[in-house]
Image 1: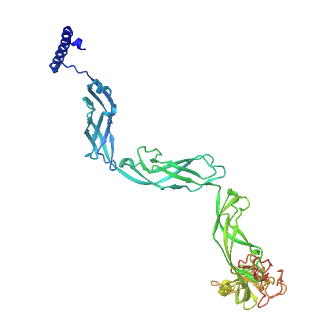
Image 2: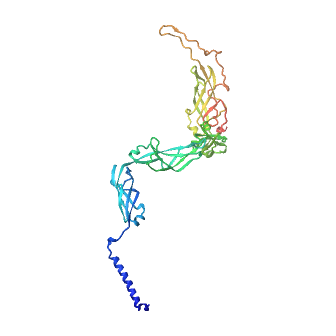
Image 3: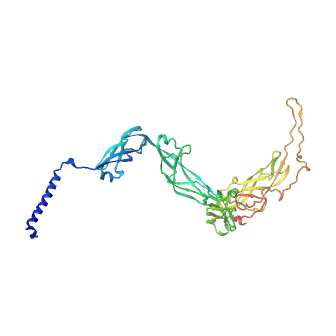
Length: 485
């Protein structure tokens, strides 16, 4: 290196090079600014969306009357124009001071750095502003299609609500008449479930109101799809017998009715549902809880619930005689006059059995004793009594029939009376009925079981269900074991 530095020619060349560099630097630095050339270009950006600011959307609804976007022509350096996204060009509409009605408002804009606006079309827009209003509507559900054959639709359950709020400008809201969801069915045989059923608003012509804001916009729905069903009152029947010293004093099922499912023709024949309680398993007094299985009646599919709890109160049997129970005559036609001739007191004493608490509460007004003469002719008849008793009360001895003697008479022949105008005597037409007292015209008793009347007939037991009605012309088995029978 020292050898080169000591070389005179080398030093001259080096000095020349440095001189050229310094001259170039000074020349560039002192050149006039106006001589610098900048490469610029223009660009047209279409459909720049107008952004709304300051609008109270809970109070107003905005509608553009002409356009909702603008076209912008801008210019700038090639690098600034070419590498900017359309989203960097913004046009805004200030609605903070807008009033209801038609408004013409100026547009504002913002551009990327280094870009300038040449022109914007349009510079202002016409808008219509209306007050927003809200109204509540019940949700209506409609179905399209059908469930499985023989099945029917139940009542739909909606969550979280069965009403919605619809928000629209006043003039549009007045057109809404219903909010509706549609359920599509295709042969379903079980409950239809939809978590997000879309709701729509409709006018009175059935056209959808497109701009309606519905809150909530969807609901959850469950639509039961079942066989036809019928709610039936629950009756309790009995099988087996209680021991002779025990009687029922109360039977209380936990439900008053059950629901039976099946085809409509089978359900049409049903009026009650009877559950059967087996009394043979009970051997002591007290309150018993039994679970009874419910089976579908013939021709039906199922019964709900499938079991029911029944509370039974069992008591030691007691006996009581109720005196002077009046006998009522029933079925006397208009052509007869009827009377009870034996017993002459026209009442009867009945010996009854049942739980002590029920017997102590009993009075003769709770007992019905009827002699039914429907269909009988004039004459004297032995008529069996029909005894009606409160539930779980029975006659002490139902094997002995109770009868009374009843006499049916034709109306007495009226006495001739003068005619009010002429004074002549009007003679009545002869009666076609037999004359009472004529032995040949008196009909002999023809009823079976005729044993003659007594003033106090021997009491009999009640009907099998111990339901308080005893017909003394029959002798039925007593399943509840009253009186030990």
